[in-house]
Image (cartoon, rainbow, N blue to C red; front, side, top):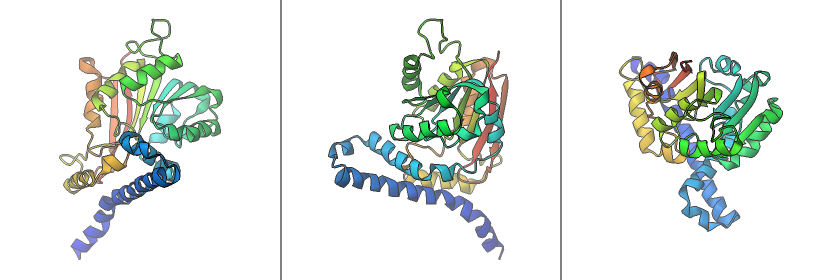
Length: 283
């Protein structure tokens, strides 16, 4: 009886990511079908990266709102504090934009590499009350993509007149369910750290490798291996289940460290545990 009780409480949490993986797989194969038979654009099949982005955009366009209704931990309170010039990495189609207080924000830049998500992103920015204060950038969070886009937008000057990556230009940088999918997490996080103004704040809400050695679960850690082997990164737009994001965040500040480093685990015993909190750069 105890075994059945244990299975009844633990197994659903461990199996929940399988539903999302199945849904993502479905949208990938439907995307391939549409490319071949509807768009009749066979050339797209040879650009696997673009095809995966297209499939993930299809998944997110149809399910992103439902997947963003309940966010873990104290995320809303952290986002409500954002002010000044803000950079949102990977906003998707903008489902979390209503969680910000647009009246506190002077300008917001959303770095989103999936072009198919931009129409929804701009619509949701308008609905959230940003008006002309929101600017969508067609780029990712990695420096080789983000920095040229910021130069092009004018927020990052090549001289010292409007800020450089070395002295920072953003009051707040928000990373919500995005660092799991950037190609080079260490370099990307270091680059974001450099874009923060002295005293600037980074808001973090990311799923990470299960902390099974401390407060996590060995079964959940094994589940992460299984889902990865089943193709989670491929079908989920490059998302990785086993990122050591807290470690990369701490290392980004170098020897001087962060003035504030406050992260907490949410649901550490599941296969997709989150860390949520805020980090503040030294002034």
